[in-house]
Image 1 (cartoon, rainbow over the protein chains, first blue to last red):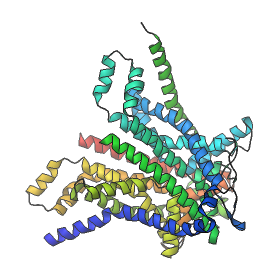
Image 2 (cartoon, chains in turn green, brown):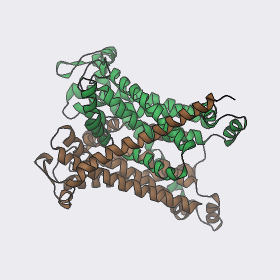
Image 3 (spheres, rainbow over the protein chains, first blue to last red):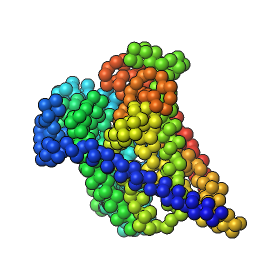
Length: 282
Length: 278
């Protein structure tokens, strides 16, 4: 009996480490495949090079890094105001009879596969942009709008948790001092929940930076430095997604190296977000 | 009196309502458009025939089988690992350096983008373990992806069980493992079930990681080592390569219906769980 309990505990301990083991394996294998190429080409030439011609040995991913940041920041322009609006709506404004419909709808938003969003952007946004704003339509603008939408579930659920975690006395105190409902929200509740809200936005950025399939469908995939929001673009993720199917040798290694850069950016964002939400908890 | 602040409040209220309703409207617009064009394609034969001529004709049967087997592998591998982790974190250890490390690892894993999982699955399962593009490679990659979801939902539901439940078991002479298997896990079951449903939804909708690890073959799978194409991948290829818009809409509509169904089941499980708790 005692022995059995001991064995079970050890097995569970091992299982509990599975996510760390997986994370270690991911890091190890991506680096093992990608690092040789970075050393070959040179870190500077790889990160800052503007030419990506795998057949001729040019592996510069600067345009993709730039594009990734363009679409990500573009997505925030839609994601932050809309996400905050939904959060405040959910926690302060919502009439009970709508809550029973609105909350499941937000959960559905998170459950819809990314290819469906990409398709939605393709059939609605791309023609709209092409006809009214010019350019190919497959553009950073279309990508940003779709991504802004896709980050909403992340932003909403996490910032709503942050608002919920506030002591009720904050709201009561502000209202008792004669503040309007809106003043209470904007000057007391939101600032108090600031670190959680910022964490939610950073996690949303990570989500936007990592999205692949929807972006392949609507960004147009041209490798070049982004100049305008109407240009088509290729991000770090879409570069991997498009070329992985047929790449081999150095070319494949270069795609893993692209993955390393993406991995670094996302890990930095995640760590920052985890740190911010931990600070709130303590 | 200062009226401006009431004007500000009015404007803010309008903005918030507009934002919230706009969000829902955009989502419904996308769903309705795909369902409107896609539902007429959905006949029984669409589900029971395999795709022909790259997907221009026929149905989606082989991709249904592909999706189901891949999801099954992911859940069979991912659920025990995730629930085991949650049990360990809640029942076998206190807040310590180790448990904080495990949580940090899980949080990090949750943030890893699917394309990175795809790259990892490709080198590790497809190449190094020599499993090839297969149901097994894809399923194992998905198992790694859904792990954080299963861990956090299982942990939440284990956390919600009153301590007195365990005390009763211990006072009756139950061992730790007996307490876990006969008291803790049965009470946490609805929460665990919700986590599994959410993971099923994620597996059905995943594309980037799957296409790199399970391939995109339309041939009917014969074993766990066969390459397959899932519904999401099929939808993506049909839409992106413009093979057949009609079939793309049909597959998209089927995809949405499945996700809606899973989502509603999860909602139902959560509601039932809340009612039992209160």
